[in-house]
Amino acid sequence: MDYEKQAKDFLDKTGTLFKATFFDHAKYFPGDKESRDIYIITLTRKDKTWRFRFGQSIANMGQTPTPYDVLTCLEKYDPGDFEEFCGSYGCNPDSIQDNKLYKAVKKEWNHLQQIFTKEEIEELREIQ
Image (spheres, rainbow, N blue to C red):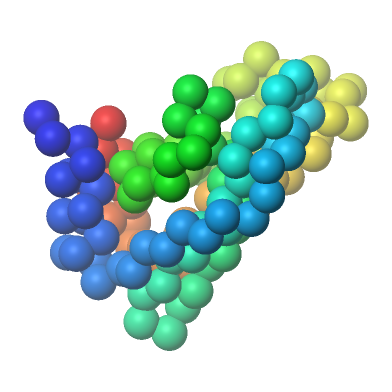
């Protein structure tokens, strides 16, 4: 299976433009010990644009992320409320850091729903 082609076909089918622009080389995730390349990803569809930061895999430093790299990392399921999120992902409901993570995941989920329909998100889940 050509995963890159799956991602490209999905973008073509939905009329979504993908752009990855280098932003910085720095620590990205809270637990990062090494710096990684950070990109600004722009998804544009009709009159909607979603821009967000994407921390490239350390193994792929120096390589611009592909649509496959990015689309497979997006949250494609409703994380529910904070308690449900903690139960599903093994997070601590008393942790401020886990609450920040939840808010970021919820925000990503909400943006994805603004760009794509429910049926398209189901298709997006199949790109693996």
